[in-house]
Structures are given as structure tokens and as C-alpha cells.
Image 1 (cartoon, helix red, strand yellow):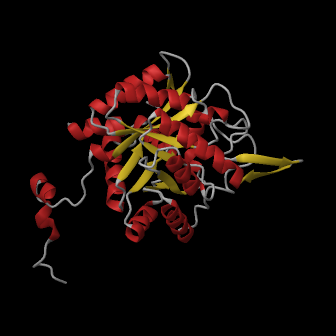
Image 2 (cartoon, helix red, strand yellow; image 1 turned 180 degrees about the horizontal axis):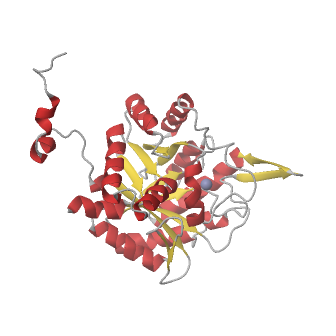
Image 3 (cartoon, protein in one colour; image 1 turned 120 degrees about the horizontal axis):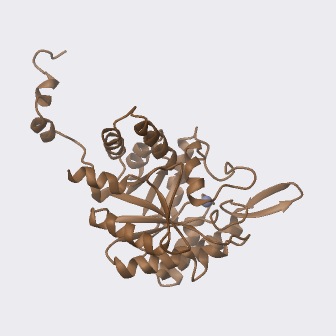
Amino acid sequence: MRFPIYRPRRLRQSPQLRALVRETELSVGDLVAPLFVREGSRLRKPINSMPGQFQFSVDELVKESERAAKLGVPAVILFGIPDKKDEKASGAHAVNGIVSKAVRALKKELPDLIVICDVCLCEYMSHGHCGVIRKSGKNYRIDNDASLSLLAKSSVAYAAAGADIIAPSDMMDGRVAAIRAALDETGFADTPIMSYAAKFASAYYGPFREAAESPPQFGDRRTYQMDYANAEEALREVGLDIEEGADIVMVKPALGYQDLIWRVKEKFRYPVACYNVSGEYAMLKAAAQNGWLDEKQAVLEMLTGFRRSGADIILTYWAQQAAKWLKD
Ligand SMILES: [Zn+2]
């Protein structure tokens, strides 16, 4: 080998030298804060399994978003918790649905903040599944094609309320094309779609179900979310969403799936987002609370790792906190 001529340690001798040759930059401009919104006022309800995270009423959501924006966080993604659920996901597409109300309030108070709307049916369905259910006796199936019109309707409702980006997370086949067509027909041809393109059925979503009050009442989501063992299929899923009109493609979860962030970036050269999910947040928070890990160091290392893997955009519950750390 080239030692002693080449000594990699020469460039690690001081913080200044290390900064000079650093390859990856984690910037607050890459972060998106996921926020949960519900009916009511002056409500800031802690989520037990996600210390530091809350369900907000619209007024408190605006305050929290303003705090995020002041810290430099450019975008929030909204998840709604409706008062009433049914089998038609009415709350998802009603003009006065909780997310539409939240979007209107945010765009009025904070016009420069990018407001992304997660689009799915599970939070609004009494059965908690992401699509329309057909039952016969004890058996049930998810009716893929019947779900598409509801997803498209919800997307148009959010765009009409002022959403800057539509982000379908349901994993039904063909939903990006259905949403794109519906947006184009209703005058929202310029509204981008960020698709949850490779979304895996994952144990790491556990705390989110408490946060969004959306666990399936029976069965699981493995007939629509992906098998976590499959990478080739993930690339096919991403390819389909791009063909159907996705502008940004997402890999979810992030930790444990960084090979896919990399492969998606390498293969498609599209803007790639990754979702640093609730379980990733909960486990690191728990370790930090026990004094087993330094939260700041561990989180910045993890988020930089997502960027190094090829993610342009990181959805993370640490967005506001990381923004503060990056300023110090
Ligand atoms: Zn869902």
C-alpha cells in the first residue's frame, strides 16, 4: 500500500481541516417537520411514545409552525385526526376537514412556509385501513381501484385549501396517476406530488399509530405496504410512481433502508425524500432519556447519514430541534 506516503489522518488533525474536506452538509433547508392536527382549540396533547411531540389544535399548530419557520425549517407535513371516522373517509376530503382547515390557517399566517399534505384514508376510516374495504363474512380485501377516487378527491381538497405539495402514503397501485389527473383537471397542474414510493410494512411505525390514532382494527397492512426484504421491487415501485407523475419519491422508513435511498438516487436521479419514522425517534429518545446516548450527537450523525445516502429531503420529528443544534 501507499503508506507512509499517503496518510489519511493528515486531513483529520484539526476541526478546520476536517471542515475543509467534509463531503456532506446537513442543512436545516433539507428538513421537514411532521405535525399532527386535531379539532379543538389551545390543545397541545403530548404523544406518550414520542416524547416532545404533540397533537395540536389548529391555533397551536400555527404557533408550532411559526416556531419551526423562525428556526429556518422550510416545510411541514400534516397528519389529521378527525373527530369522526366512517367507511368513506369523509373527513379526508370534506371542505371543512381538519387538514383543509389547518392548511388554510397556515397559508394565511405563514404564506412562505411549504405546507405538505399527507394523503391517506386510514386516519379517516373507521376500520383504520388505507383503502376501501370489501367484506364477505370473515374475509375482507382492500379494493384498490375504488380507493383511488377517494385519494384523488382528498388531494384536490388539500390543493384547493392551499397545500403546496401532495404526498400520497397509501401504497395503492395507480394512485399517483389518479391524483395527477385529478389535480390537472381541477386547475392544480402546478401542484407537485411527493409520493411515498417505497413504503414498507414496518414495526417502526408503532408510535405513529398512537400519534395519528389510526391503527387497523383488524388484519395488517402487508397486502399494500411492501415486504421489507425486497429491494428490486422497491425500485419497480419507484419507477412506476415516476412514470405516473411523481415529482419527489420517498423511501420509508429511513434507518435500516439506507441502501434503498442510495439505489433510488443512483437509478432515477430524482429528488429523494426519506422518512425518519416514529419508531426511529422513539428508540433514540428512550436511549437519550436513559443517558445511554448523547441525543444531539446521535441525531446529527443519523441525519447526516441520510444525506450521505442520497436523501435530498428528510422528514424528521427532530426538525425543529436539529435546526437549533445546527445554529449553535
Ligand atoms: Zn394510511
